[in-house]
Image (cartoon, rainbow, N blue to C red; front, side, top):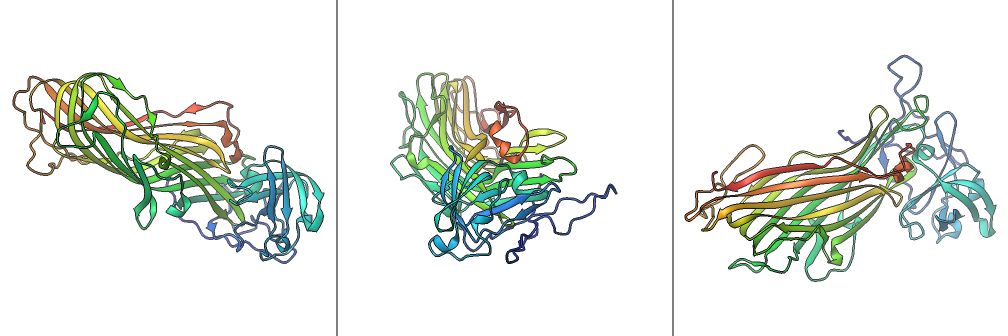
Length: 462
């Protein structure tokens, strides 16, 4: 699915008068049924007070009407107990007040809160009871709401770039370093020396057996489309992560035994990143949640020595897409482009090393999609007893459209063959917790089909 910027929706806020979000011009249904296509809602700047809640009232006609509550904020919130306190702007740190007061809340109204200190993951709830309080505040009993109740009939495609300011990382320690991306501060970069098992050591002339870096320029994806005359559920929905990435790994390692780390996490606190990003669709704050952990996976099934380096660039797409006619499916991106340096491989085994990311995606803190992306470097050798090496006299030669191959001459003293590969694995799963979209899902985890890309970088016969 392609994403394109949509027109900006400017909410109509008339003094003391509710403005219907769906009362904007919409194209007539081409089928001639008299129904209208849902209005396009674009991402906007939101209100001046970025901590103010939005309250909307769903209607049977598919429209939602904004309820003016005077720029109120959530000053108390208990998601588990189903309670919240709304306080008018005049009593909340001097924020600018709009029309209306929290007293206008009614049962069935939907409260959407952006990310604040009280709601660190935002909130999307509907009112089940109201209890007026002191100072113009109102305590409400709540139940979880979904996007059909907050957005009604609407169509939205949003792509939101993440900058360093959106990323929350833990303090840095030795072993790894997480920093802002190199391009205008957008994205994130991980540099790390990967811990290797006992019995593995760097080859001569190198201080690190396995090291690498991963640059990501991530964008969070969100789409929604519903027309109540077609279905009370959305006809289309999507949540995901796309990212232009650059991955580089350097393997200068030798080992004499079989080992498998089994996809262990990198034990560096800096390699954990959290995002709660508020996107305003008209007056409604949509909170996109993402958590990223880094992991490594190193394995070998015998004695092998490797000197090889690889650099890959590509575009990652991970997440889930819903279509009323097709159900849920996984997102996937194009194959990466890879270059390699001249390589040396000795031994009789297969070794593989990768540094990957585990991303959890959701809305309002409720995780619904998990995706693992691991670029890797793999070396194979069969009876290579001599200097199994490619020429060291320059850069790799050009290869096929997607890959530059590091050409290798047949090394002296070799009684077998060897090869070096660059690849990437993408796996994912979908959870029932994405019911916040308003789409009925099965109460179990669905594993997405695994996607693997692999290209030969160099070999004894290439």
